[in-house]
Image (cartoon, rainbow, N blue to C red):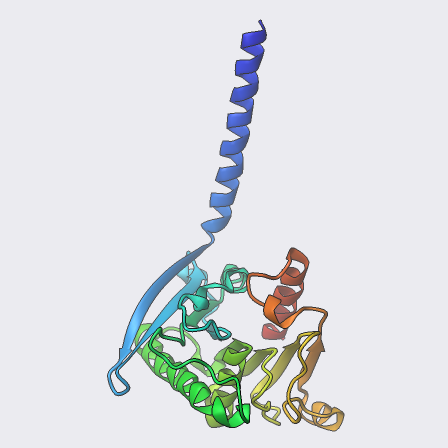
Length: 253
């Protein structure tokens, strides 16, 4: 009798585990994740891109997002360490092209001097990556509404995205900066601009608009209690919920 009870308990536990796995798998079926590599022959540079999109492409709302990661010390794979955000947005019918900006052979990011000058080449390379990927995906994924392009970037990737917006404002509908700290935000009402700020690292002088500029251009600065280094997958569940909700709300405004 006791052996029978044990067997029944094990069976129930096994069924519970299978049920949990099925639920998890079912939730994952709402999106698909792919990865491909472009080669910019003019710069002799490989650019890997992770694409997050609804599993049923027909349900996509056709608005595309280009995401740029923070500095990852050239180790690679950093375009996939914001999956809490990219997968969430894909589940909401957006398509996200997340660019790997760093190669192992790249010089390390400058840590000394006037960083607006010593990091400019790095940001320019990132802006060039964004432009190259944008031109390629317009051909490879022609059914998206690129006139509504959204850029999102964290930290160094935020500075790249801001620089791109300065250089190609006509290509960007919305810019979302996740705590970029060096490149000053454009003072403009179009593209629309929203910036999530950390609680531990201030931006350099002039990066953020003053109160008069905020009102004039409708730029939104969101000062959070989230640390700069916890805006990727290191964020707590509460922090993830806050950032995904605020970013989605702004995208859908």
